[in-house]
Every structure is written in structure tokens, then in C-alpha cells.
Image (tube, rainbow, N blue to C red; front, side):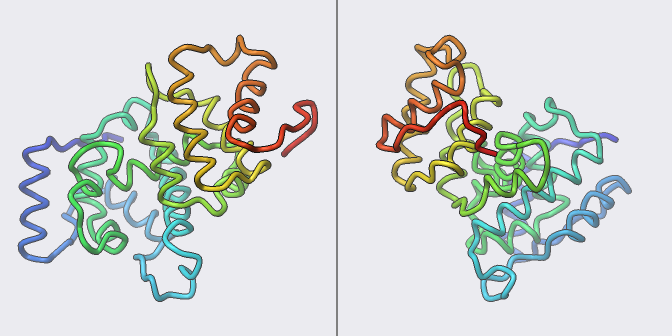
Length: 232
């Protein structure tokens, strides 16, 4: 299956046309893209803040969309190279799922559709799941419980020098579920990690990767834990 892309100029043109007409409808795409759309919408409905299923707020809906998107695109054969291509996410947003994105972001901020990078909503949701993946959808759902849009920002907007450290971010979120830091503490953890990762190699720290992550939590005021215990 091919994964089409859309450049910035065409993205802006497409977006401006939809805003002007207030018509965020998908294009007739290839059978492959139609299949991606239909499979995803079989798992999630358009966002309705008044619906009982969305009573827990937009964060829970974001996680639901992210997990469904991760599953559907994995079945479609998307690889990490495609996931890193912003042009693909712009195409998916503006040509395949504009109505889904519009339902979540009714004020239609351009950054959620095409402008910029880390805040393109579908991209952010897929990377949130990928960077927190715990080996199964159910385990990942558990580490993303109570996640907020701010938590997502702290994750996808802080790749660090050299890009994302996937093993590290997955462990940070695993620890987040165990340690239950406040939102302010977690924001501080992500900022501290961004600063320290430039100077430190986590696997060479005392206790290895787990020791490094534990120290991040301790440094922002979370009580230390026994690293030899099973925290699954």
C-alpha cells in the first residue's frame, strides 16, 4: 500500500478552501485510503463533547483515536519512515479524515490540520501511542489513562537531541502510571529529561535506564521506589 503525501502549499490551499466553504468532507480517495477511513471510523465516531461516551473528556477520546489509528495503520503496513513524514499526516488529515479532525477541533486551528509539525492532531495521536507502547493495546491503554492534551504535548513536542528515545519514553510512561505524579510534576519530568539527555546517556547511569527514569521522578518530588519490584 502506498501512503500519499501533501506539501505545505497544497495543504494550505486545501485547508483554506474547506474553511471558506465550511465543508470538511473527505475526497474520493483510492480503495486503500477508503479502507483506512472506514476501518478507523468503525472504531471511533466523530467527537461530540455532549455524548455520554465522551464524558471523561477530550483526553480519553484522543487516546481512543490514537489506539485505533495505530492499529489500522499497522494493518495497512505503515512503517516508521512513513510515520516520520509530515506530508503523509497532512494528506491523511486533509483528504481522508478532515471531518474527524474538525469534530475534535471545532475552531479549526491550522496547526491541528497541517501547519507546523508536532501539533498535527492525527500525527500527535499516533506518535503518542507509539512512544508509550507497552506491548499490547490493553497495556498501552492503561498507561494512557487520565492522559491530557497537555501530557501529549509534553511527549510529542520534546523529541530531544537526535530524535525520540522510544525505550526511554515508554518507561517514563510506565513509571507515570505507578508513581502518579501531578500534571505539574510530569511537565517538570519531561523538561528535565529534555535537558539531561543532552549530557547523559541513560543506560550508563546508576541503575541503567530504570535508574535514570527513577531519578527523574525523585528529582521532581516523587518518592523513590524499589527498582527490583514488578510494577506491571
